[in-house]
Length: 170
Image (cartoon, rainbow, N blue to C red; front, side, top):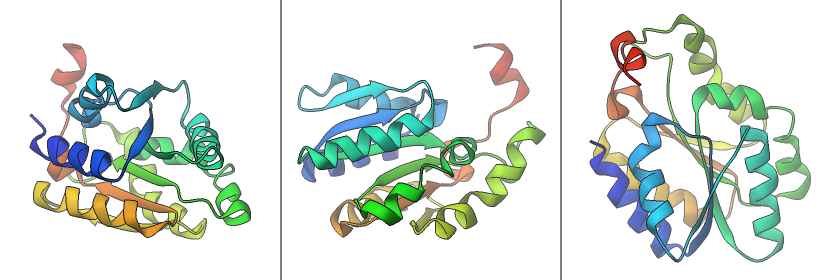
C-alpha cells in the first residue's frame, strides 16, 4: 500500500494539475490509479519518459499544469531532452520513484539510482528527496508552487524494496 499517494493526489488536485504523464511503475501504482479515476485529470501512459517532457511542455504552452511520473532508471532516458528546460524555462514537476538504493535486487538499477540526483541537478532541475511517507506530499506541494523545474525523489524506503519474487509473480 502507498498511503502517501492519496496525499500527493490531493496536492495535485489542489494545484490544478490537469495532465499526468507516466510510464507504468509499481512504485507509482496507487497514484496512477487515483489519477486515472480522477475526472478532472487526464493520465497519459507514455512509451518512454522522453515523451513526458514534450507532453509537459505542450501542457505548459497550452496553459495547463502537469506532472511527470517516472522511475529513477527513466531519468537516464531523458538526459538529452532535459536541455529544453534550460532553453524554454518551463515549470516541469516530476515525481521519481527511486531504484538502486540499499536492498535493491537488480544490479542494473544501481548506476542510475546513484546518478539520478546529480544528472537532474546538472540539467538545472532542483531536487528534493522524500525519505519517509510523511515527507512526500509536502515536497510535492512545494514543487508544484515553485514555477520551476523540480524533481521529488521518493526513496526506496518509502515505496518498498522489490524482490526477485515480486518480479516473478507479476
